[in-house]
Amino acid sequence: MRHIRRLDRELKKGSAELLVLSLVEPQPRHGYEIGKLIERRSQGALRFNAASLYPLLYRLEKRGWLHGRWVEKAGQRRRRYYRLTPEGRRVLGRQRRGWAAFVEAVRLITGLEHA
Image (tube, rainbow, N blue to C red):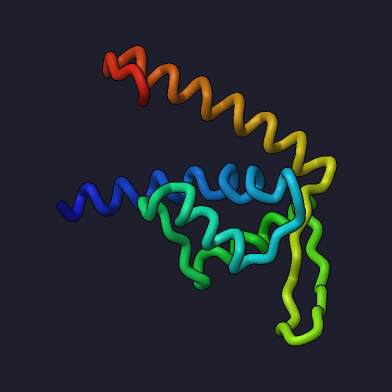
């Protein structure tokens, strides 16, 4: 069981950039919203806590793949919204192609139709 949890952690870590970049592609989003979307769209299978999500967002911003901007709205706390940069869009395209190739390879090996 411990081995499975470690594998799950590694898979999540390996896909985290792809997930975040994909979610900010259509529109800017703040960190809490990104975390909730990951959880909701994965039907609870994936969850990112603040201790792992925010350092990831900062790293992606430092690499120039995301641009963050503080936004204040009346009656709400200040939030940092992230949008995809042109370099981030290129990286996202490469990551999507890489994951598609990986999923296809797993499908070929395992015989699963929806790997």
